[in-house]
Length: 341
Image (cartoon, rainbow, N blue to C red; front, side):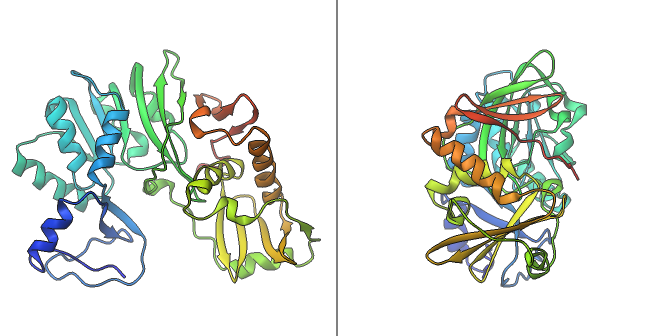
């Protein structure tokens, strides 16, 4: 249940929330609330938020901002993060884009009230914003499945992109990439269990009824699973990075659990895997052109054999041919999805 808190409903609670170190949800299901008469909502996917202030500060610190830098922020949201950048660098150095016009209008009101004047635009952040390019820093206040080529083309050589990466299986990581003269970029993954909501053009497609997909494996022979599904789901520190690795192994797959059975569904290549309880362990049945659970288990085997290295030991390399997650003791993973719909 989502309960609205506004100045009119409860001023003290509203102020306490605004000054707390918490993420505040400001929109559900891409539907702008009637803030004059907001209603309690049951369920729904949050599609805009005000990120907790400590994380905003962490992001700007990680982006290695210096005097004179021209920056592009992707995902204005409430404008809190944008205002901090204006205070640090001066409004004339800050461009911020937001895909949601209603969100951007509210942020603009805040900028005006506080005396800031960044360059703002309602735009698809996956395309960057060419009118203000080139930039010294691009900072994503949302996550993306991969780094769009348009962003690389808008960063000056030696400039950096701070990018939260996520995907359709909810695995997350962050990378600070330095852009080279040839337009490629590379950098290490950053520490921490930090995640952001996906940019709207990168959100997953609806895949329909899981039971329909499950019927595809009715005639598939089962085998014993080498890993439990808990390794790629949940919100624990132990599974945070393994979810990301599994997602890189099957980048167009989605995950759902129904009646205790893990469903992996890939709408792009028509593949499905079911991981089911079986006599104290797990069994898997698969169908389609890609053996989804085989790929997950192979990358988990490699991760375990390498000693379960910390995420900061991994390197992300972005070139014109693809985007690759590399570790010296593990096989290279291609992060770029095979289909970019």
